[in-house]
Amino acid sequence: MIQKKICMLGGFAVGKTSLVARYVSSIFSDKYLSTVGVKIDKKQLNVDGKDVTMMLWDIYGQDDFQTVQPSQLANETFSPSPAGAAGAGCAAGAGAGAGS
Image 1 (cartoon, rainbow, N blue to C red):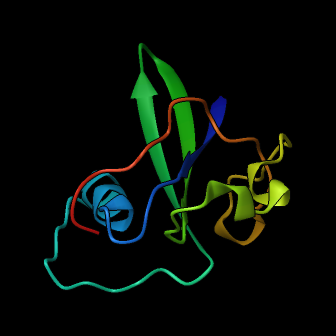
Image 2: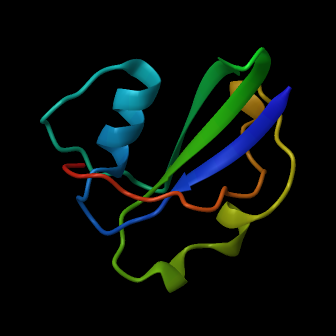
Image 3: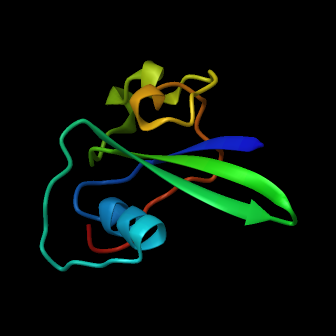
């Protein structure tokens, strides 16, 4: 099984939460709710016959990324169970969408 952690970083109200909700749950809401702290979602896929588990970390919006806690971006392993979702380093290239 392949396991990846993807951190969504971006400014306040740019669409990180909406992008994750659309990808993980196929839902979209135009109602704005600010993320407090970190919201973690899990998406399981099968790519070329291999199981892939993605942990998507939706980190609260901010314009100054230097205040992101290093522990949120740490390169550790994670448990695929929702209760053990902490850990695993963020994948390069994670970004933000539009309309959080």
